[in-house]
Image 1: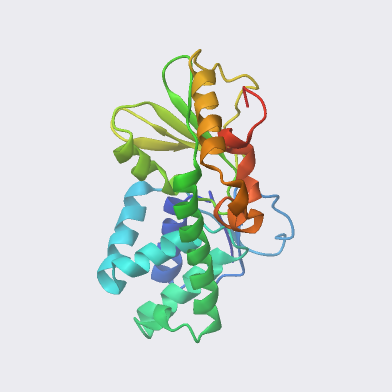
Image 2: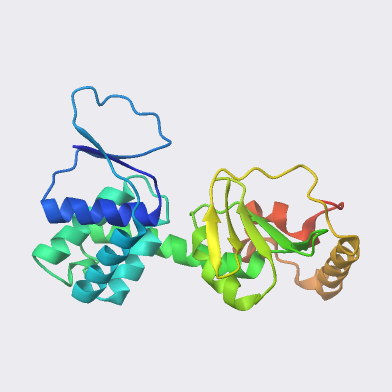
Length: 251
């Protein structure tokens, strides 16, 4: 059977719960926005995302397999690796039916793939937490842009909600056109985000950018310049969104 879902983690948990509970076989897993073709002679099942059902599945997995397993599932899912959904479902089914510790056995090829996916997401999230640059807008809110390889923007909301307090902010994923933003009671994820060419920066923002550039220039030591090391800490895919590396303002 071909399963179709909305590519959200809640949607995936609903999918995972249904497949395991009903002992269903998987022929393929597709996302709602993908072109559906080649399934003329294959049964398809379109699943809706139900937050309550997703919470129930998550609670069950945590109870039976532990919090660390659920964390690994989350990070691996957001890696955007091709076929990661099927890998996670097969691994979860194996853990529940045969061996609860299977997901820790790195000698297994399936476990190694999932572990590599989770590690990719975890590392990029950690790196981006230090490389995001927020810019002040005319309405006193702040915006930051990124183009990560992994789909880590949904994993940043909780951190910045705690870190920035009552400040209004939004973080935009240019590649996926998604964003997380602060709300009155927490934070939310938005999809199909389109940003205007001119973002309406606050009049003081240009001075802040100058300070960033001056700081970056003054702490640089030409005698210890190491381009390879810099790219390890600041990969080139992030440079477009680092104010200190931009020649002009606005970005």
